Length: 473
Image (cartoon, rainbow, N blue to C red; front, side):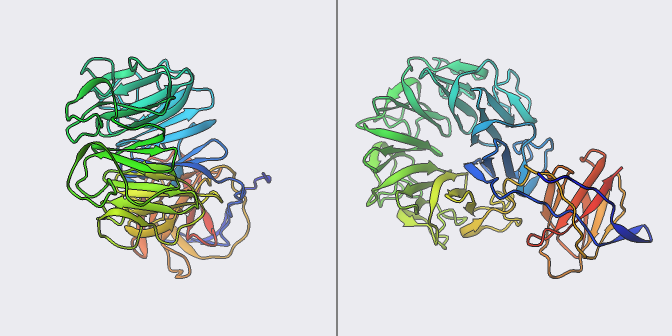
């Protein structure tokens, strides 16, 4: 990284307003810092950068963005604090999980049912370590409980247990990990709305927990506190769980579904009829990955294109419409995809070049595009993984108004330059995004009370990266 140089901007002060001229701080981000994994929570999203750090965006009222603040929403990626060496990420209902390269698990966000696994039921807006859990190779975050797969093939779980989904023979929730009985050869895990799924090394699927819609797939609608086998399903290599329904991907590239089907999320041409045994999604083969949202299903094909089916009221099928589909439809103008994920009513894809595209619901900024507007077609997440380098200052002539500066609590931005977009981002001096949003008018007031005292850089616009210095008293 280049040496950093910090100098104050020349300014003309009029009525406690700094007219900043020759504004500085062009962010020299190295192009090799890209996303390598993605995850979708209820109304928030996560990306794992290839330097082992994590970005988050969307709803943050329970601390699920992990940036030390309970921000109502954040429509562009910001770094999760104090996380390095991360190898996997997962998003649940208002909480998040991360797996470190030393086999430990970290969690943040909502914790009313103990889903953070740290021995208490208190929400946290910074990552905390899951208690007494090591040797983990995979994680899964559900509605109110979490799963971890260890290298010895055992599965551990914590959080809500109202339906026996923790698999320890009780209906008592736990805020520390407990082992699911009778599992020693697990190779994959998934969590839905009160139910858990496990793939064993022999390719069979096992389930436990809530089963009102047949999401356990064992031919009944009875809840189970112990693992039961999913009927007539073998050769499974991947699983996914949504709201009262489940998906399985077989080694022949076919997709199977069971449970709730109110919006056609089984993909078999039928809507409204649940099934307590697996049914094949129609007309699709060559699938390499699957994901399940609230009521939408997603599949990645071996040619890098993406198929979706199910609910579509926010455009979460990504085909340019708001019409539900009980058959798979192709996501518009999307190729070169290497990974897929689904949130509650939005979807994410990771492309082979490390860029991320998203579509669907966006009222909390969960698409990460600098706005709060839904999109029924894929749009690119902006400013992803930009927290890895410092700030290098270069002269750029541009005139804005920001006042008061210095400030202790609020600043007002006046932006009369129509060449710039209305997105703003505040960075600290090492290039980490600490606050972002949209300028709602020519004059916009921002609350900076949550920022520690020090120097910051305010960037307005997305293309030229023109920024100027702020001082928090």
